[in-house]
Length: 559
Image 1 (cartoon, rainbow, N blue to C red):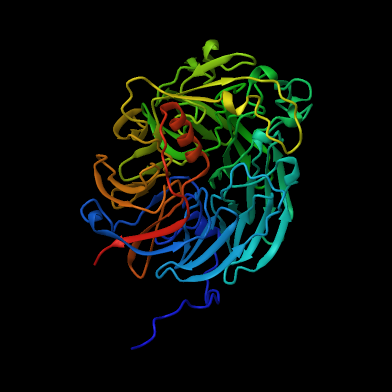
Image 2: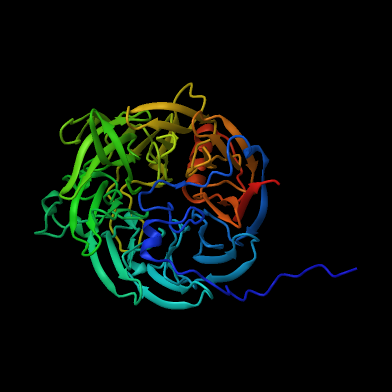
């Protein structure tokens, strides 16, 4: 009897196709070269081999255990048959995308005194023959795509001051563009571009203006120095305008009456010139945030109809519970319209000309008093990305409905690198609306008519990023029952599901090798999905156990 085969040595890749600017602008259908596959942020694969008619025959073709726990949130990035996956604790795995064979593994040696508020990573960037990783200790690392060896390692900021990074870098025109996390630790946020070849700084743009800079009059005293406004989700990019769009987080600390003013550019979208980092436009979704409603998800670039006019739009299903449509222009960002997509009690109205919301002041958290509001501090949709299909012309939103929250504001002393919320953990409330039969939803919206076409509901909360495909399917996980599902993109009908090892909060992707279409996703529950679960269990007096541990799952139609 022949001996059982053994694992192959990790000898690296024998060949690699460099990623060029042209390939990033127009990626081949078989590849997934960046966070949402294309600069417009659609999260859409044109591959059409897997359809509602054959999705029931999807089966796992290989799996790979990452060896670490906590929230796995990155997409499998694929370039001509080589897959790159990042994990919590800043590993990067390179695998044969067809067989699952490990080619190399990079493990970052993180500092022992590092405070990991969000122990996750949301993906890598590719350019030429390198792989780029933004790290929890606030570095950007360039790796050789064939071997995983470090080419350069650049410090972006001091982690001991509360700076860290979890996002996938955006690579555009030879620059590796990243933003910093740490809003809950009192940092001053910024977006930085590094030279892809050397790691040198190309430009750096702060998201909180210093005194004398435009917008600085929206901060009082020295509040700007610890103003937060972190950036922790990858931006989108319009090559025609040469503008990259980034969402920003809440101002720090959480309670607005302790930092009076609009607090620009918190809870906003910023349009930055890719060559210089110069601010070319912005829109603030809500001013003087007091709900912890980060608006870090970058807007999706879609053309929408308004009457006889086609609007080059920026579409954003916001954490504040409104679905925003803005117009991207060379000279700025214009407001088009907005409407709620979940129950929202904090806004009384939105100015139809400027898009500035008017608040119900009884629903805005203050210092020294418990205030309730809807949606909860995790919002109608948190960071998890929506998707758009040009075939159905529908936008797919992973939402949480029927949740409300409460906060009690507290004066807290700021200490660099320490948690600084403006509220005690015990004073963060979460409630399910009376009579609610579900929490999680996937909503499909026609953005031309501003109407909801279909909704799928889940008893569990939903933290599942969405993938849309040319075969007419929508894929997502996100629920605490560990299922990964496929829905008919036109109707929302469930056509397939597979139970995985853990819960799925990672971004799915699709690619093909040798003519076979694959659907790939990481399963690995943790971070805020687990924290919301803990809060729901506390509110309900229940105990829910979602196992942890990361596994890469790759599916194809059974032949």
